[in-house]
Length: 261
Ligand SMILES: Nc1nc2c(ncn2[C@@H]2O[C@H](COP(=O)(O)OP(=O)(O)O)[C@@H](O)[C@H]2O)c(=O)[nH]1
Ligand SMILES: [Mg+2]
Image (cartoon, rainbow, N blue to C red; front, side, top):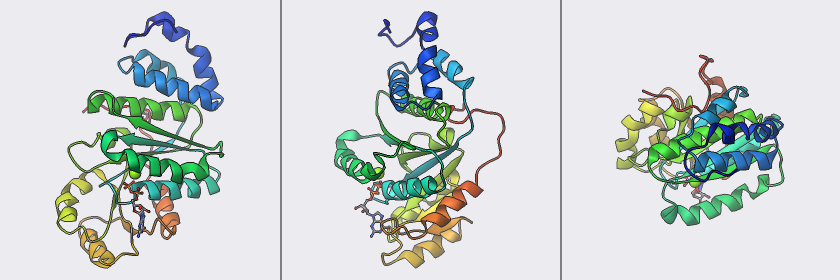
C-alpha cells in the first residue's frame, strides 16, 4: 500500500479486496494486518463498508471493571469454556494506560499463552493511540474484522468504570462488570455506573472474605449477579451460559460498529 496518511484513496481500498478475502477464510496473519491498518487509518470508513458486506454474526461481550478485579483471569477462563463448546473466540484487550499497566499486560500475555497454539483463539491488545474515541473506533473495527474472519465470540476487556473507560456500551451489546469483594466504598461508588452499563455483574475472587456481603449488596441493585473464583474456574460455566442467554436479538445493526448517540 502506497499511502501512509490517515486517509486511503479509493484505489488503496479497492486494492485491499484480496486481503479481506483472506480475512474471510480465517487467515490469522491477514486478520492481524487488517486490524493494524484500521489502527493506522482510523478515519477511513470505506474499509468498514467493505468489511460490513462480508460480516457474519458474532456475540460481542464487553468485560469491564477496576484494575485487579480479575477481568483477564475471567476472560481467560471464558475463552477455555467457549472453546470447549467448539466456538471460535477472539479477545481484544484494550490498554488505556500502557505505561501504568505494562506489567499487568505482560502477565496477561503469559496467562493467555495456553491459547497460543489454538487456532480457534485470536488475542490482541489494542493500545491507546490518540483520543479515547479513536480507540473505541479502532476496537469496534477490530471486532468487525474478527467477525468477518468467523470468530463467533468476541471478548473485549477494558478498564472501567471511570472517566478513562472507552464507551464499551457502544461496542458490545452485552457488558459484564467484574468486581472484587471487600471494595467497600469503591463498590458503592461504582454501583450506579455499573448498573447503567452492565447486564451481568460478576463478584470475582469469591474465595475472599466479604464475598457474601458484596453479593447481597449488589443483588439489591441488579438481577444478574454471579459469583466466580476465576483462579480455580468456579462459576465460570454458569457465567458463560448467562452471557449467551443475554445475547440480544438482532436488530440488523452490525456488531462492533460504533453506534452514534
Ligand atoms: N484470590 C483470587 N485471586 C484472583 C481471582 N481472580 C484473579 N485473581 C488474581 O487477581 C490478580 C489480578 O487479576 P487480573 O485478571 O490481572 O485482573 P484485571 O486487572 O482485572 O485484568 C491476579 O494476581 C490474579 O491471579 C480469584 O478468583 N481469586
Ligand atoms: Mg487485565
